[in-house]
Amino acid sequence: MAIPRAAKTQRRTRIQEEKEEQILEAALDVFSLHGFRGATIDQIAEVAGMSKPNLLYYFRTKEAMHKALIDRVLFTWLEPLRGFDAEGNPAAEIRSYVRRKLEMARDFPRESRLFANEILRGAPLIMEELQGPLKQLVDEKAEVIRAWVRAGKIAPCDPYHLLFSIWSTTQHYADFDVQVRAVLGENHAGEGRFEDAARFLEALYTEGLKMSSGD
Amino acid sequence: MAIPRAAKTQRRTRIQEEKEEQILEAALDVFSLHGFRGATIDQIAEVAGMSKPNLLYYFRTKEAMHKALIDRVLFTWLEPLRGFDAEGNPAAEIRSYVRRKLEMARDFPRESRLFANEILRGAPLIMEELQGPLKQLVDEKAEVIRAWVRAGKIAPCDPYHLLFSIWSTTQHYADFDVQVRAVLGENHAGEGRFEDAARFLEALYTEGLKMSSGD
DNA sequence: CAATAATTTGACCGATTGGTAAACATTACA
DNA sequence: TGTAATGTTTACCAATCGGTCAAATTATTG
Image (cartoon, rainbow over all chains, first blue to last red):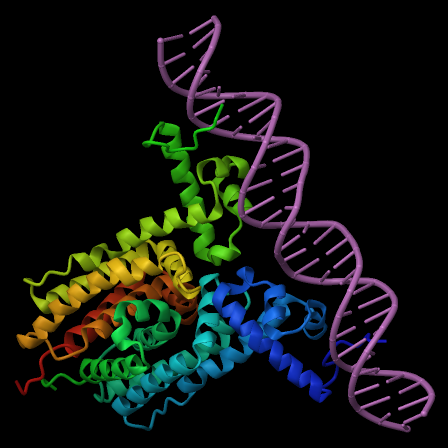
């Protein structure tokens, strides 16, 4: 009998790994577009190309699916920030961080939108993650930035709002992609907008955080 | 018989005006939190404090409610950009624009989230608005900025991505409010974060767009 | 006041929702 | 190969979905 749900003690069969991947891929499509409540299991099942009960064999509930996705995304999403190096050149570190975040917005827009949807509805599933690990990591990196300021390597600024601004400006190209395309129109239809954005943001942060000549 | 739906030729009774307002207020709560598909008429009715059929007496469908909301928000949302004055001082104009957008994020966060939700799902209801009036307005203001650059009043930059960055950084404090609060923690729980954000962004754009000393 | 129009409600509809039960099919492995 | 575990499907469930209807209630007006 099939009492044991998938993944009892460890990742068992090859087929489990494949199917779970296939489901999460489809779930990412649907959740990132319609949010948790707006997404339906039927739709995910259709996109995944399998029956609904089969889907529920691997993930017992809709929420389990969503949680699995969010957890995975959350980890990779914070990876660039972890790379923030206190020893490196401040301007170069910030530039590189902006570039990496922008690349993620370009290459993983669905992941960005999934996250945005979760935050928009109040982040009920990841509130502890935000208040715990995320806050801790940001606090740590904020201290790095503050040290740069103290050392006179960049202009005085609030490190938290600096990070917020980098997050928002880069993720904007994933979350508001439709609007960006509409405003830029046909002529900028290609992926060139990411290069333009990179150029603009690089200049903005380079000049905006440069020490004023007075010091 | 009550054949004539509300608002046949013109806004009739006082009670119609009141109830429609009451409904849109509740709808804003629910739509901004869960998006179009995630929101339910029952929930809106409950928040509005009236029965579902009564709600549907004023707005025939869920989509009609959503459209009415979006249209209203879209108009007021673009108001600050219209104020962008070609004759004014560039640095002051940009500073004032950032400040106004930030105030809107603080005072009308639900409106911002409603808009964000609509864009996230691909903006099916307002695609023409984006490609038409919005693009036109942005094109116009982009030309203003470009003129400033040509006149040597601000540093050379892509005007579109400048506007995108202002939109994203300011709306971030409405759309990602939960995350911002979580990261800042208890100590910054008050509304002080908006003042800090204003200070940071003002400095960033002032310095970031300043003409380099070489000219 | 009467009567007419505007508003509100409870009961209800078919479709869709998240999820289950059990029969059936397939795979892994002794 | 046999058999037990794993995987898949059909049929189904109660709850909720968006929306309708006709009756009841309230406001407006002559």
